[in-house]
Amino acid sequence: MSFTTTLKNELVNIESSKVEKISELAALINVMGEFNGKIKMTTENVSVAKRIFRLVKQIYQINCQITVRKGYGFSKKNIYLLEIPNNDILNDLGIETLEKQSIPADFIVEDEELKKAYLRGIFLAVGSINDPKKTSYHLEFVFQNASYASFIKDLLNSFAFNAKILEREKKHMIYIKEAEMISDFLKIIDAHGALFYFEDVRIYRDHKNMTNRLNNCEQANIDKVIVSADKQIAAIDKIKKEKLYDALDEKLQVVVDYRLKYPDASLNELTDIIALETGVKITKSGIYHRMKKIEDLALKIKK
Image (cartoon, rainbow, N blue to C red; front, side, top):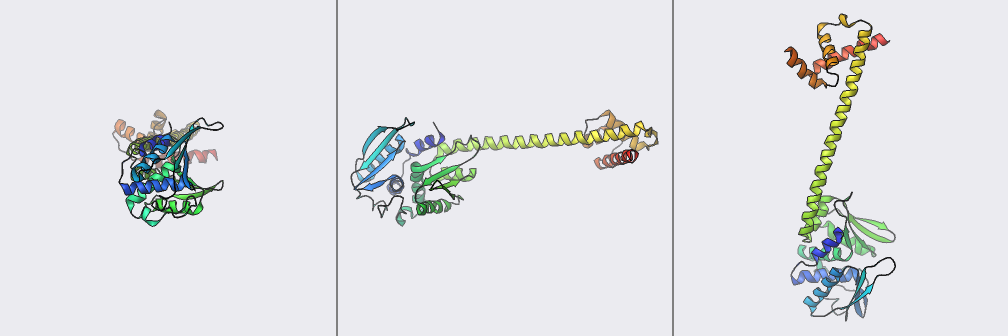
């Protein structure tokens, strides 16, 4: 079962006030409905079909007629067709025209709680969210009507979700990609079970990514140390080959000896080793400048 299906199965069991139910049902019918004397809706999700049936029954004491058909082509899912006897409830739901996906009357989304209920209905109708275990975070809604898509985008952005619209195959896709925004969306539509799952996975992924970045950074530092040490050892070998070791002053000879003795050590590690074994403190900067003198000498010999 997909994350979206699990989420919708949770949403259909949410209890709300009558006015919130009206806003949610308004969204479902506005997006999914066909108006021709009767209100007709089609869905492949049995939970959404049951939710619509219950909302209509609870608000208007009307029974929807439900017909179940087998899916066509490659789809093996059942298709649920719902019919509401007449259009009389459309005005009550803020649907003022018979055009599909029309902008609702203001009273349907006049306060924050009604906006949340309306967005819950929109998600049940046409929403989907990637499983957070996958590579990217992605919440989307797809609409046919451009002005209605713009209305839903503005509704989402009234909660600061940073939603955007993308034109795709003559349809209008609203999407949100920021993980924190998707988490907040789950919160406002009261999908608390899905929210906990989403956050658990997100925290795990963030921790894993941070660990990987630290490991990569550590590996890069190790590689840098090895390259630097190899360069220093090559310079020392050239000086010794030309029998110039004895011409070095005592401080340079100490650094040369310890670099050869500990070829894999970083400069920080060499400072600790020299201080521990000789009792003479030396800074990383001091070792660096001495190594630089050795490399410069080797370069002069090469020239």
